[in-house]
Length: 138
Image 1: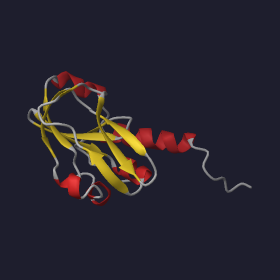
Image 2: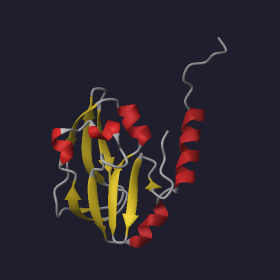
Image 3: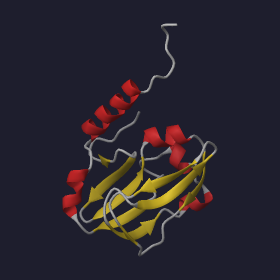
């Protein structure tokens, strides 16, 4: 799984790249892989206030529909309009071109509730250990 070192992450598999007071938000490589081919992204509305860990938007794929949560509180400053015509951009490049929204951050202290890249990596490993999956012992 691709994990960007300087990004922060949630346990629901969202990422945020913070530059000053603006946070660019998307879903992780793990999330896009689990969803499969993404067919639709309901983009949030510019100017909307969002709260940390509350629903930001939803994504539909060939497998399911999933709510996407905001990793930080603030106001939607910009949405990735390219996702309207090409939602699969998230599958191809979830960290660069497949971002979902940019948020004007209202509370910098909320970053302490997020995971570093190393913490997120450890979290994913714990998920793998807890997933019985297929056993080769049979």
